[in-house]
Image (cartoon, rainbow, N blue to C red; front, side):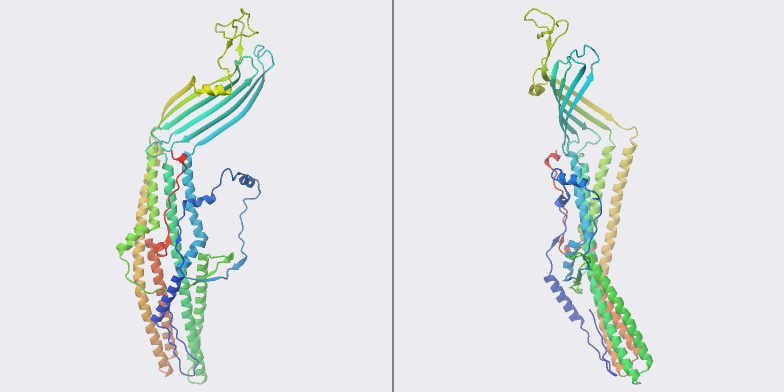
Length: 614
């Protein structure tokens, strides 16, 4: 509240201007608060949803053309330059504190940057789950070899050996989220065509199917161990959300302090202007009295000195107000015109000097433990450190892995009747180019693999040709020093996180206790400074009366006027300090967001795709 004292241009008498009373100032403040509540904005939610990362994700198929084009655009690494069409956004907004906070939450780029941390951490969770995505592979190739013959019997009809190979192979492998084993299936297809006379089946199709499983039994195995990196990523994502909430908590307090800083600067300027007006009137009155020979010149000098000091104080108050307004407007960052200076915010509220009973220590400490986002983030860090200990313990175990493989193969193609200089005992076909035999007798051998590619596939599942293997492997360093050291470091990190939480808890208790003490002190200061201003006003009024009849000197009058200015400044500081003390208490408790109806909820992670859950 501001009290003003003025001097009129009279020859001898000094007129006293009555200032508004404390009750009328409080009424005006309550009325202003009522206006602010009527214009209050709806609740705001600052939670970062898990789907917020979708705007940064790309489709690997649909985005391929644009990605390919960007790879061939030169100088794409050039940084974008900010363009400001004007220096200052001249728009002015009269807002309540709550509306100012909401506007700042929507526009401040620094807070927007912090809000992207949980988004990036969400992608880390997806990256951790990616290990369970099935890995598909395929290879299609063709190969031809033409080489000279090395023997006259190798290929009598040609001087070259020609072979052409076709392959079309497919495979899929997957890490199992339950056991951390790796399951794989491969399906290979070979077709060979050659001009060699020694090839009994030409062309020949050879399909092969192999199923394999590699399963750890000690190291990298355990209850839910396969998903331990996913749980670490989820814990880190929760920590990033709590860190963001803590940043919002700090930011809201900063906006509140900026807001009340402008209010304090405005009222300080009013106090300084009132003092300057008083001193200017005193200079005018004393100057007239000196010219009339009714007052010594020293009184005019004293008045001039006080007026000069008052002008300096006004200049300092104007500078303080300009700095406070600029700080608030840049922190709110409401900039619709694309200017370097955001639009100006004019506070609509005045400090509320009404107060009730101060919270008890037990209530404040309970709220701190339940609501403080900083403490919640540190508790999540302890949980992450405990998971790291579990991982490090597992890595100290020996490696004992079991592997199993089963494969099936088949063969089909154009099977030729192969003959030699003699008739084989197992002759089952006749070739005109073979040895002479009685009519109707066989003189060559034919492999029973005749057929096409479909015949080869049908024979694959007859299980006539197969292979299998089972492997049990064991490995362990003799001293296992690396794993033991990593486990010891994990234990140290876990104990450090617990001690850091304990230290943070102690500091939070100190902040809450200090905030409670400051709030109590400012409540008492509000009453004391208001009373001091009232008595300083009355003292100045009495001194003015004495000055008019010559019973008080100019020096005495200026001293009482200085006392009033000091009392007014202290009252302004106490009123604003009470509001900042409330903000400090709510901030230390973690209830600041709730006080301004700002909702923050810890967002759970989206479930991974079905094929990554087994």
